[in-house]
Every structure is written in C-alpha cells, then in structure tokens.
Image 1 (cartoon, protein in one colour):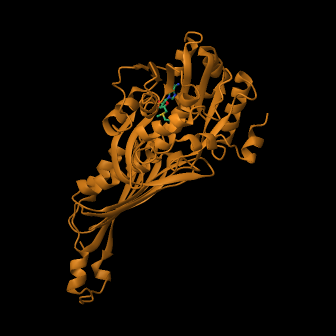
Image 2 (cartoon, protein in one colour; image 1 turned 180 degrees about the vertical axis):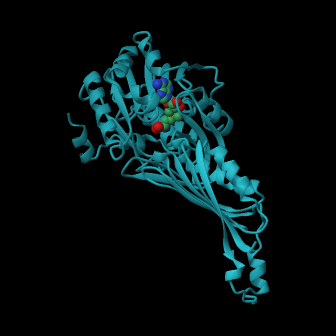
Image 3 (cartoon, protein in one colour; image 1 turned 90 degrees about the horizontal axis):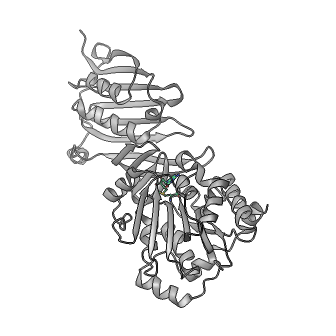
Length: 427
Ligand code: SAM
C-alpha cells in the first residue's frame, strides 16, 4: 500500500434537518468538536452564513482541514475531511452524522499525495525565529463566526466568539444566548437579535421613560412580552409606580436572561412585579376594562408567537384595557426594515386611537438591522407625549438613575418625524 501524504474522505450527508443545515453557530461548534474528538489541533475556524440560507465554513487543523457547504433547502451537506498523520477522520464523520441528524449518507475515502508520484525536496525553509513564531497554544484558536439577522435584501452581522451559553428550542422559538465581540452577550430568538449587553439601554430606556414622564400619575402598568426583563427594570426605577404586570409567553426567555444577562434581567424579584408566563394576546382579551395607565408591548418581530401582537383585535383590546388618559407603547419595527409591518401597525393604531393619537418615536439601536427603530404610541386621552411637562424632574431622574440614552431632549427629538416617514404613515 503506497504511502500517501493525506487522507481525504468526501462525505454526502443527506436528509438532514434544514434548520440544523442553516445554523452557522451550531455547525461551527459541531465541526470544531468533530476535529477535536478525532484528536486534531484546531488552528482556526471561519464560517459564513449565506443569504437567504446556507452555510460554508472551514476548520483549519494542524492535520489539514475539515470543510463544509450546506443546502438547507435540500437537507444536504457536502463535507470534506482531509487529514494527514495518524488522525482517524472517521471519528469526525460519526460525530457529524449524529449532529446533523443525517438520515442518509455516502462517503468516499481516498489517499491524497501518493509519495510514489512525488519527489521530495529536502530543504529547510523556515528560520528558527519563524519556527518560534509559528508555535501555537493548542487551546487557543481564532474563530470567525458571524451571526446574521436579515431579511431578503439587507442584513446585520455580528462577529461572535462561537460560544453558545444557552440554546433551547422552546414551544415558541429557539432561545439562544451568544457572545459577540463588539456588543458582548446577546439574546437571539430564532435568527433575530433581541438585545445585547452593550446597547440594550437604548431600547429599554426609550420604551419606558417617555410614557412615564408624559403620565407621571401612572400607577398600574402592563408589559406584554419583554422576557429579557429590561423594560420592567426601567419602569420600576419610577417609585411612583405601584404595580407592574408582565405577561411573557416564553418562560425559556426569562430563564436564559436571568442566568446569562443578569444586568438586564435584574428586576424579576421586585415586590411590585406580578409575572405571568402566558400569551399576551389571550391575557389582554380577558383583561378588565380601563385597568391600566400604561400598556407596553415589548414584543418580538411579527412572526411566530408575536404575529398577533400586530393585529387590530389585539390593539382594540388594549384600548379597552387602558384608563381614560392611558398610553399604549408598542415595539414598532423600523421605517427602513420591515416597512410593511411598521406602516400597517401605525395605520391600525390610527384607526383605533385616532389619526392624531398615534405618534411614532424613532431612536437608534446599533444591533438591529439598519440601526433605526421605532416605538409606536396610542394615546387614549389628551396626554401630550411629545413634550414632557416637568423637564427638571427628568434631568434629576436621569442623573439619579444613571440613564445613558434617555433625557428630555432625546425624548422630544425622538418624535421629530422625517418627511419620508410622515409620507409612509399618511393614510
Ligand atoms: N427588543 C426586542 C425586539 O425589538 O424585537 C423584543 C424583546 S423581548 C425579548 C420580546 C419578547 O416577546 C420575547 O421574549 C417573546 O417571547 C415575547 N412574546 C412574543 N409573542 C408574545 C405573546 N404573544 N405574548 C407574550 N409575549 C410574547
């Protein structure tokens, strides 16, 4: 048997779970583990998530490389296990077969670089200094993995460490806690960025404080969604608030954030909080009339469990449950991302609260696609949300509570609507 420099196993994994085939984080983790299980020394890994789907990546090992290309729409992955030395790549094959839940597969093994066909040149290219420079600590290797939140035309990608701290498929969605290099730990639901340690305050301060300063007499607040806990954390900074009722459909989100994002999920044990793990759509349908001063809908994008949080029926029930001067605040998507949902939501609020009682507040969240996001309001009474009454109170509150985004100028400025948005919202 002629000696060969390398061993190459070409694998066809078929009938795999399409979601697994589209999960860049999971595939990168499985490929790195596949190499390590076979005793390889990993040098680096580079993985890319294609739009609309599909993953390509390579794990460079001291013993050569493992590479993959996936077609989720066919439940198919083409995998190359190229090794040299004593490493048994069939161990990697078995690991990946299990990880990908492949129901059918084929594999061809071939020797590469038969020494009979090669002529060895004895030379020493590297200097000692270079040798030293090439030494690597086998524990450390660079991982180049990107998490991408996208629609068919635009995307936001965050490079993350490859660490997956929490990964549970709940009855409603996939709940993950990942760590990005630039924005720290983050909560992702399915493939959407929900909140990150470094910019969550943009969102949580702007969803809560404008309404609470516009209606300083507010005592009874309802939050629908908000499972990461950031919104209730901000509301409960207002001592005048007597009760916060929170209705989050997915207990896994609360659990993940309590464990891995404690600075956001900081107020779940607050005595003024009444927490319901339930569907907010059903909850508001049975809610008492005129029960709440403020209702905050901190829901995810209009897919899966949150789809109904954009419906006329839901907001009609919210209107009923609000007190005479009540304020509704809703996560409103973006005029530059999901425009249809953004516009339709505002038209729904205009039809229920009145054409001039559905203002939009715009603000920035760097980790949401386009960075430009909105909260949409429904004003039941004559509360003037655009210019808060007691600006001096706001200033002292912002200082005392160490707010990092919200202040009276940002409050007013956020309701300054660009012309293109005004045109989008005109019915
Ligand atoms: N900032 C995020 C955004 O802009 O997309 C929202 C964050 S928060 C984590 C969204 C929460 O809404 C999630 O925890 C999700 O489980 C919850 N949710 C979705 N549909 C829901 C429903 N029908 N009732 C209650 N909570 C819901």
